[in-house]
Image (cartoon, rainbow, N blue to C red; front, top):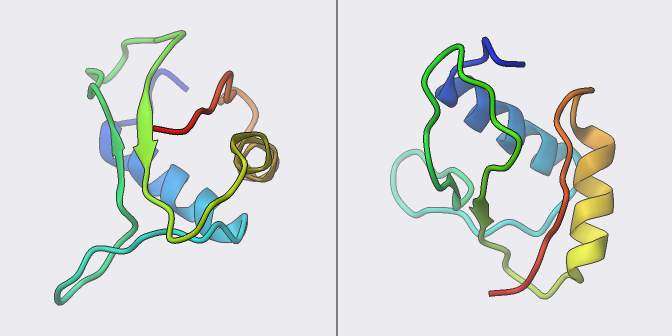
Length: 86
């Protein structure tokens, strides 16, 4: 997974969240997309054991449920370690 670019990782998570059927908040405008951000973009070829991301949802969903549903849709090598409300 270290050779996946930041934009590809964003697309990977966006697709996984849609397949998981999460109630995502969407941006407004001509080309709406889920409100999702990864805190720090890694350079290509750099591995990481701990990255933070923020996901906007329209309605309440338990962090454990979000974690379980999303993890089922992610490829091998990407692991969600923790989810919490903010």
